[in-house]
Image 1 (tube, rainbow, N blue to C red):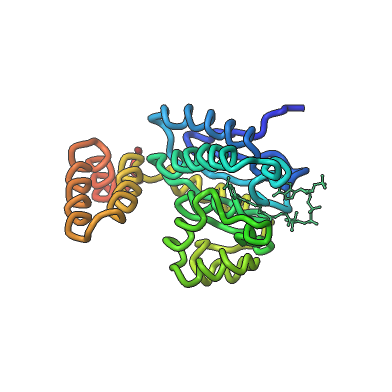
Image 2: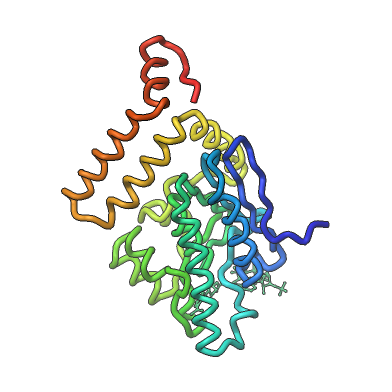
Length: 257
Ligand code: DAK
């Protein structure tokens, strides 16, 4: 049996990562984070990358948090180093130039929710449970939860979740905008395939440009962000994709990107 903690499957540039620690509900320990970092070395170097999907092994859990048993004995210095390692890795995932989608197939707690928040968007199975329960363990979120959660769901809801530590179901996660879609777990696989097809059918450079415009624009004032969009839009006309995409429309055929 493989002792890999992250299973990597490549389907024509759409790469699916599965965290495989099902006995610990896929909790993130240092080894999982280090392996994810190594996987990212490869993904960052690939020009043919189209999208990344990330999920957890089994039908019970996406990721049930950072590994509590491993964290338990840490000193403040070790805690800082652990959080720093995870934050760097999640930042690398977030800033991949292609869409990164979390397929949340069960518990999505603590560091698991923070992993999902570092993805561009999330799709959840209807049995998924979300939360930032760290305060119940005597700590605060350490993998970006206090910062990315308010940016996704707004500060009031984020403070509710990080101070009560309450768990929410998939329906509430959808209502507050933590996830984009909810579906029965049995349909998650078919959805992943459909999404793979959809993303692969679009102009790859255009998809990268669209993600970059949203991400980089959010850090700027509106006028600067609109200027960024214009620059990226114009840049599309310098490549072959725009010619192919628009010619295909006019010639009533599918584009071949
Ligand atoms: N860490 C380690 N092991 C875990 C785990 C976790 N987060 N979650 C589950 N497991 C393990 C259980 O210990 C159990 O192992 P065995 O006893 O079988 O060896 C196995 O997975 C199955 O779990 P249960 O038996 O508990 O399964 P149940 O169905 O009864 O319950 C549950 C499922 C998800 C409700 C429960 O396991 C649970 O409450 N898990 C903990 C959820 C949680 O509190 N997550 C947040 C973790 S804290 C920071 C860095 C990071 C963080 C904070 C600060 N700095 C460095 C500053 C982040 C912290 C977190 O993420």
